[in-house]
View 1 (cartoon, rainbow, N blue to C red):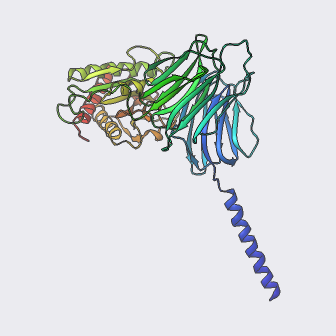
View 2 (cartoon, one colour; view 1 turned 180 degrees about the horizontal axis):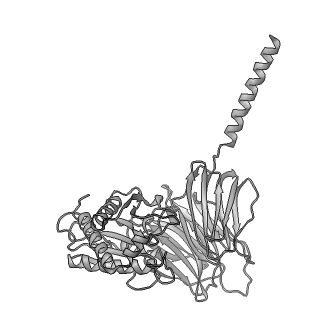
View 3 (tube, rainbow, N blue to C red; view 1 turned 90 degrees about the vertical axis):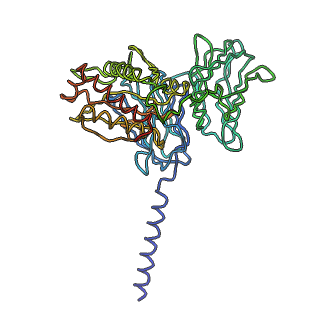
Length: 461
């Protein structure tokens, strides 16, 4: 009996130990911030965690899979376009893992310089003599510190950047400190508030997400030999700019509840009566210029996108709509500027036109909408149904933008306009590729999309 009692106690001990080990191993960390500065990407976590990396030189892509069960950021992408790094994007690809993807400009792979486990994963992309430290998160305030002292004989340098928050956790003031007095010129370009510092030297590029629905991030850089400081926003807002008392820097009081340039509501309700007449539609032909999109032996995507958009523009205007295109020729337009145009114009709808490609044989059309937005979903559904009815093409469903191959489509996720992206057909499908190369079929596509927009404007599903 004594032996059996000891055995039971031993088994119970093993069970408790196993349960304790399971609790310890469960991933509790969240990704709290993702930032890029001076050639180094930092992935900051709420607790030490482990990670793995995957290198795809052929795709110019580098992945970091972090043992983390959540993401504490509203943003899902940083557009860097600096040196070897083009964009950084992240998503909760498994319940217990966050994937951070680095889209690179070359096949040269970055280097991870963090040991495991860690609460800050550093990925080095290019060497530099200057190192910049980025604040791990924004609580009551956040700062970016320039660690290398500025020589006395040099021009003014951007130093600390502090973002203060109000009681509701929203950014209320941005303070930028400089090593010497500077003048400041502020201008809006789309939804980007740019502050030029003509007396300051170009600053190493630093990017910090602000995690706010209006003010998305702050960044520094250079333009024609002088420093610039930029706030990227989802919409324009009112602010008060003033220099600091000693002249070494400036502050911005952010009045986020008041739009900077209020636009009067449209004369007609955007969703009832009269179909398209008087409605404003922004058409976005995907890709352009240096960005060809995908291609096949039958068609180049950027060319098909533009041709369909031009034809759709004519269809809509013949029905009394007003149409603005993000590009009307073979020009590259940065992704953030496309939704910014629609929001600035207070458009009734934003439609991004693309073509699809798959490594395996695939076909049909699909449409994406901004997640958690009923009007965007209805717009995507109207376009999808009308396009299929007009052309007889197969369907691949209407999906939220998080269901796209890269997740969180840039022209949708920060777009306050009812918005949708439609993939017309697959360029490398022999049947669909030949159709895309046919001008008469592209005209049919434009007419179908026009019917979808009319249905949307009339408030029908």
